[in-house]
Length: 181
Ligand code: IMP
Ligand code: MG
Image (cartoon, rainbow, N blue to C red; front, side, top):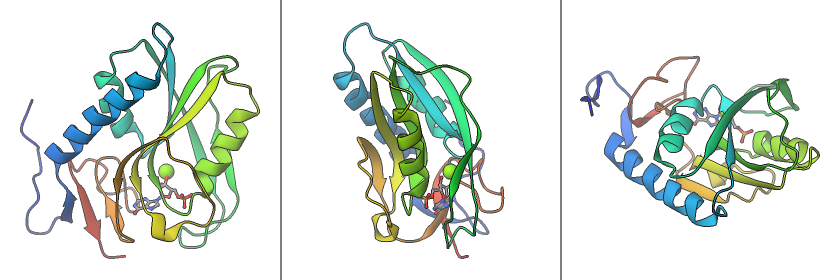
């Protein structure tokens, strides 16, 4: 494995979760997901663009299962501090009826995004539908969400890195760090 291109340091977001810690947890999540997936059945992993891409790629490479990958993207009307209606602005390419689907998200904050996505996907009659989120910020929750596989619970801070951005910056950080917003 190549050395991280930008380890934590001056001028960079303060580390909340280090790259090694994330790697270990992603492996742990993969083991949990494998344990729940019936033998021989393909798992369709659906990543929420763009933040979940980095996590999804690492996760599916860890999964010792037949997997397929697809993506969708949402937009939320209203500011991030005041979430409005969540709409799917780029839909899946693949049909999910009758399939085992794992929704993969970077972070569950107020819960509106995953709640809307799960409700929408459920209407398409997948065989099973589960949620895997790298991060959970429970203090900010506005709608109840059941997270089947959760990487880390974090405090109410704005985080970046490992796919998460602030105004499109910092997605490429190999760790999760805190920024003041
Ligand atoms: P929710 O609908 O409020 O749960 O928000 C989920 C979305 O808000 C996530 O998919 C992220 O794109 C974004 N988000 C929430 N908290 C953070 C954060 O701390 N850093 C970066 N993005 C965040
Ligand atoms: Mg997102």
